[in-house]
Image (cartoon, rainbow, N blue to C red; front, side):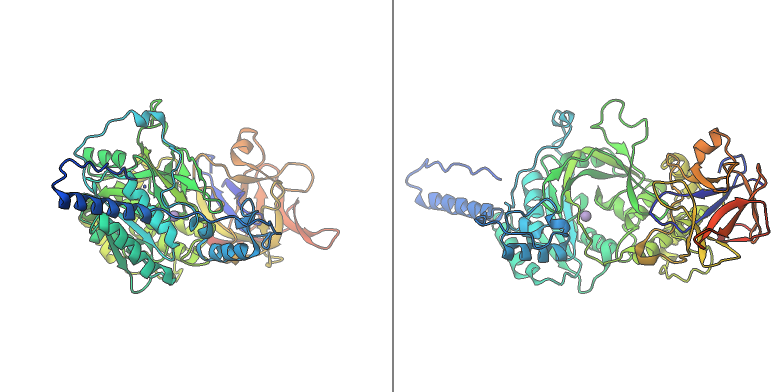
Length: 583
Ligand SMILES: [Mn+2]
C-alpha cells in the first residue's frame, strides 16, 4: 500500500496531519431646474415652484454634511497599537483620538471619519472603459434595494442610501428597504427616522425600514428584506456600501436577458481606516471546503479578451441581485442558517444545482467597507462551522466529508446541532436539483475532491501522546513534534491546511535518504523529483518509508526534547485522529 503524508502550510503551528492513500500515484445630486418666471400673473404657481425648490434643497442638504475644522496642535498618539491609527489620524486632538478609537471598537471601521465626510462624496470611476460605451435597454426591470445591518454607523447607512438614490435611475428604483437585525445602539432610532423623513419630502415612501425584535442573523435579514420587496429585481446589499455610477443597469440588463441568472457586482475596497477606495479586479466568488468564501480566478474561457464581460462564478459573497420571483422559486434563502457564514455558499450552490446560474458583472461596482472586525460575534467560527455542516448535509452528497475534514470534526456523532434540514431537503427534491458531483464537474472544477484521504486530524506517537506531528516553522521544511491540539484553540487554524483547490499545493513528508531528519516538500515537486514520499502505514502501526525502509519515529535530542527522526524501525506506533476508511 502506497501512503502519502501531507502537511500543509497555513498557520505557524499546525497540529494536524493528513494521510492520503494513492490509487494512481497521486494523492451598489441632483441638478436643480432653474425656475423660469414665464407668467407673472400666476403668482401662486411661482410660489409652488419656489417651495418645490426649497424642498429639493432640503433633501440635498440631507445628503450633505459640514466639514469640521482640524485641530491646530498635533499631539502624540494615544493608541499606537490600534489598527485605526496605523496610517490615519496624525492631526487629531487627544479628545478626538479617544472618540475615534471608541467608535472604531464598536463598528470595526472609522465611523469618526465617516461622520465628517460628505454623504454625497464622489468616488473615482473604477469601471473598465468598455463599460462606458455599453448601451442598456431603457425598459429594464425595476429594482428594490435591500440594505441589511446590525449596529451600523448612522452616517454609513445614510451614505449608502444617498449613493443608491444618486446612482440608480429614478424610474427604476422602486424602493430602498432597510433591515435592522436588532441593533443595540440608539443613534439608529430617531436620527435615522428624521433622515428618512427628509428623503421622503422629495421621494415619498422610498424608504422602508424594518426592525427585527430579536437578532436573527444574515440569512433571515435578507429574507425579511426580500419578502418586503415589490420590485421586479431585488438587490441585497450590506449597509456599509456606496453604490457607484452605473451600478444598477448592467445587473438589471443581465437579469432581463435571463431571469435565472443571479448577479453580483464587483466590490471595490473601502479601507476601514481612512475610508479611501481601492479598485478590485473582477474575480469569481468561490469557497474552500470549510465553506469560507474566497476570490477565485474566472474560468479560462471567461472573457475572450474583454474583461468587462460578466463571468460565471461558483457562488456569491453575500451581495447579489436576482429576479424577485425566481429567488422565491428556488427557495429564497435558507432561514435555518444562523448568525453568520456559509449562507452565501449555500445560496450559490443551490442556484447552480436548481436551475439557475451565478455571474459576476464587472461593469457594476459597489464600494464596500472591509471591516477590521465583524459586528455579530467576536468569534464567528462556531456559527460558521454549524452553518457549513448544515450546507454539507443538505447539498454536498458524498462530498459532505470534505467539510468535516476541513473543520477537523469526526464523520459521525459530531454532536453539533445543524437545525431542522427536512424542509430544505424536501425543497431540493421538489425542485429536482442536480447532484453536487455535477457542480464539481461543470461549475467549480478547480475544487479538489479529496477522494484519496484516508484519515485526518492529529497524528500521535504511542510513546509520547501529548506531542503531535506539526509542520514546524514557516518558512522552513522540517516537520516537528508539538503539543497536541485536538480542538481549535483560540481560533488558530489546526486543520484545513489540506488545500481545497487543485491549483494549490500541499506538502508531503519525505525521507531524504541520508541523515535522520525528515523533510517536507511540495507534493508535486517531490513526485517529479522522485523523492522518497511513499510510506506504509496502518492505524496504530509503524510509519515506514517504502523506498528506504526507515521509520518515522521520535527520540529525545540533546536538549531532552522529543523530536522527529528517521531511523531503523524500532516498533514505534502511530495513530491518526479520524479515519475515513479503516486501514
Ligand atoms: Mn460587508
